[in-house]
Length: 140
Image (cartoon, rainbow, N blue to C red; front, side, top):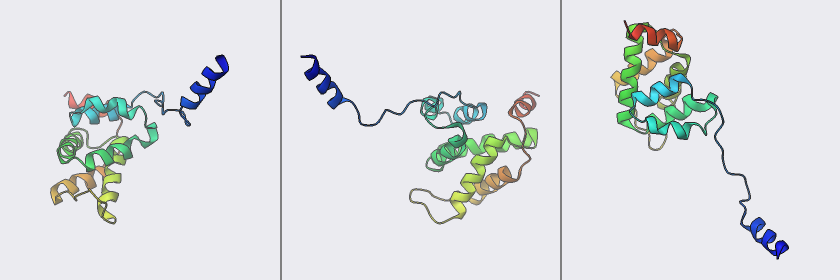
């Protein structure tokens, strides 16, 4: 009986292990970005993305959601206004988006208007600031 049960269990076991969370805590910049686009529930999804890939994954997400893009760019614009810079994470998100929109057309991605492209370019060129510094300046 046991060998048959073992054979059945082995046959039903998945061939590849299931994806598991990376075990990393989410970075503060990602948490802020998800709050800015009003989608904090996506934080669980980002636990499956390695920390170094989260800026590109987030950029891809908002590139396909115009409302999220608008909200995120408003956050970037405000951060640059109060802190005269953006975090390294936000810088990478902006750089990824600029690359998307200036490269060959990607299915499902519509290039933002000139005003939004200007904010993205400013995010790429902005001095890099620590998240803590930006947050403290917002409170003033």
